[in-house]
Image (cartoon, rainbow, N blue to C red; front, side, top):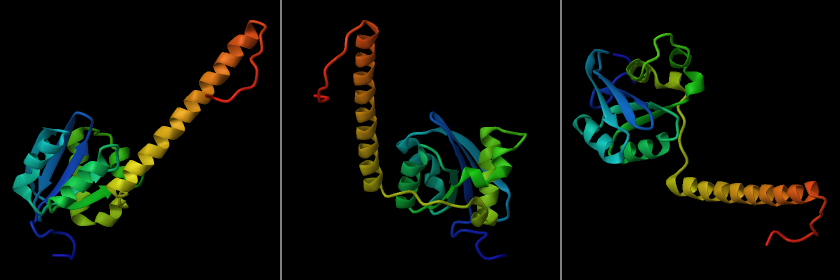
Length: 168
């Protein structure tokens, strides 16, 4: 068998993650279907839903949940591959677009050649937290500026002009 096709566990799991539920598709090292299941997209549900496949290769697409899911699974000993959806036309342009078929495609591609998925590596958790803080501050500053400009515009439409002042 070609190098890289199997994992230590022999199982590859494709996961199609959405806000409420995650569809999983497991296949063995021969590419045969083992099991499909649906679980809530919550930390405990994912942990228990994948526990019987410890050490398996898990493939999921980049998305808003992929940073925490990939960290959690890697810490639990899974081999995690986060696929770049822009590079996976097989999934993005599929005529048969269901959560289960997307999970199956991810599993099949991840089993054969993870390089086809153009895998990405998420930032560390602390870096992600720092970035969220900076983005939140930027959003608040922009919102404050918009509110100040809106009040100035209202005053002008009523024939008044507000004096220059600081945002405080």
